[in-house]
Image (cartoon, rainbow, N blue to C red; front, side):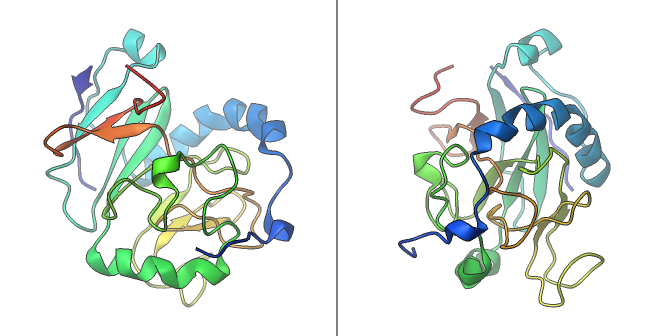
Length: 215
């Protein structure tokens, strides 16, 4: 395992009418498009300058340890794991507080659809710690990479009351700051939360391992 190098940059039921068909039918599509999605996010939020482990180790899916102690509130870091961009967003207190305001507009606010959210992230923050959000930066529609639109302000393709989140420029899907997809969008599911855990002192996130995925 090795360190990365940094850069800056509920309700009880789910409205099934807003949920897509079985995601397994789209898995091959997402997989096939993942490489393109990575290229897209590299434009929006550049990857870190250098990565470890080695190319060979990464190809084998080695865990990636990320020092999160230097990520300031409001900042996001992107690292690579198993050939995918993984975002680590340090949400501000206000951003965390406002997440609950989005529930009525979301397709799956409680992340009940299987396959995209591990049990420890099935909460309103979709994370182990409220302030630190970890997600795979690939849209669950056709594998494009959404653009971080973290500021609470309107912009091209965004609603006037935009509260910050992620916007997929390919087909217009929008996600809140917990990676939850809004209703009536092409993306059928919330952004994937990868397996991860914190180091003993809490200063690092280790992506690729958790209780069910050992290094």
